[in-house]
Length: 340
Image (tube, rainbow, N blue to C red):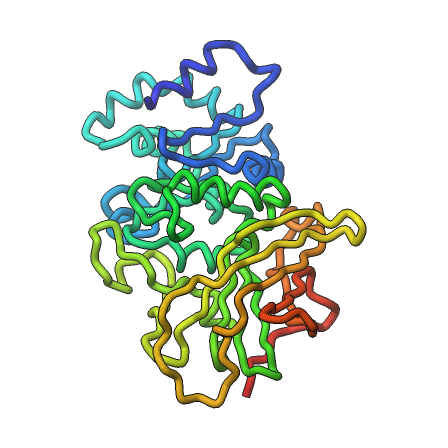
């Protein structure tokens, strides 16, 4: 596997190739987003692009400066040329290493090329439900997912294949917005609202700060199937056990483009599960069975610079049992102030 890079270089495709991209046989790629990420970088320079494991011990056992192969990684053409010249000798110096990604990184260390981290590459070294990870996705295009045969289907009551086909509905319309989180408050109902576009909407009674909402809730276990907050390579938050703070979750049901007003309209249906009794005098989200999200087109240059999370606003509507949300670029001077 490690020598694939060298072997392809020797095929003499230099006129057509800018990047070499590697992944496992169970890596799911979002090609348009892969292109969006790679075009930020000069393919004439040496670049090694990818990301780490979500589980801290995996990074300790392998390397924090290694791009994990299941999450996928990219090598620029000049870097691939340099690898080809030294790889056969290099891999013989590291016969004790475990995988092709580990050996590639060892050779890159000899070349002096560091890892450029892009958070949209996901190794998914976790067990359980990816919901917490996906609904708090970094402000970066979703490039890959891995280990989907190990974790729960990303949509409930579906097979893993059916769940990916559902996600594809949104990906075909606006892949760069897929999983992008926006947070807002409904001050009239005292709700915190989180939209993970193309996947799910959460409505939570009361006020949760943006600092907390942008951290993944622990709906998953680490790679060793343990619930240990300190074992993750990023900040997480507990899935609240307070009966009034349990989120009401709405999963994507359909999406389409409204060409007349140039917006994408996506609909999310309430995940019907029992909720504990809440004594707060706050409107119950359970009576709303559907959420409609209207999203304006993304700035084509958004990812070329320092990106900003989109803003959302809960809109007035006369539609029964429906919450309507507008998602788009933040307005001048707009910021999130938690409810008091």
